[in-house]
Length: 388
Image: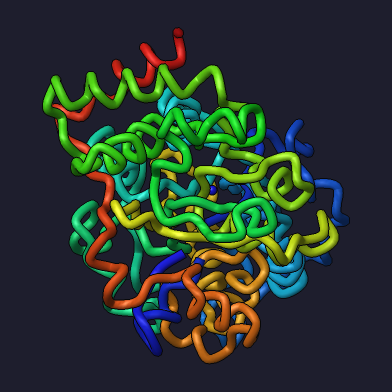
């Protein structure tokens, strides 16, 4: 698992991704940073920032997407508040929702995408936010508040946003890529057989097929969905994998020549990711002429979180402009934090201007994924495709 117009709109859309939490007081199995030493005990009295240290938990459990946070951000939070953040990662909204739906997951904060917020609110999996504790909310761009899935931001605040399109190796595609036909036209697939991937996502991948067919990615017309299903089944023999987790690494290494990808994954493939892996400057990203997806991931607190006060403090910390800029610069996704935009590395700003974030023209070709009673049809479609 990047978003906004030129100048402020362009850069206020910074491009998703990483990590999350465990479910016990010890390190969770998938935790990459849980072994860090616990900081000194918090102070006994409220500090000048308004945070009451006596109310803070010693640990906070954060469940997030892969490669979707700067590890130093967690260390800075621990140093300031004495709270160790333990987190695990997931690769799909549906996987995360299934895990927390049963209750008592042990997680405090999760990061659902736009339509998944709506699902979690409807199922009463998340709790209303106490905005009196979110003093940095004013730093957020108004372009990314009040979106359809949470019109009053009662349950969620924006974390990062991005685009879904095609990442490709310019050395293999010297003339560039401008259409979904690069991934769906049978005439193009033999040259890249076993060297490309599609996202492991029941809405994104059918959505790409629908865009190739000239349709809305939210259509539920049975005949049109059958066309998309047939297109995906025909593509499968040429595909390396459905992959949402390490597309960035495989593009950077050359294992993939092209991939259906989120813009932040493409940015990471190009620039590398801290000490994790080196980048490949030949990686480019494009929204095909037929259009693509715009999406936003959001911070929510689970209804059964045992550490809700600490969770609010952590969310407010992530909304600090300097923290938001550091985080977005590391992961390559688009920050919805308007005050963070001037603090972004120039290299990142230049890549957004080069197409890793949208301008006014591009925004017209992007759609949000929406969910309704009818969109259960995508689950049936995806089950059929994966079962072939």
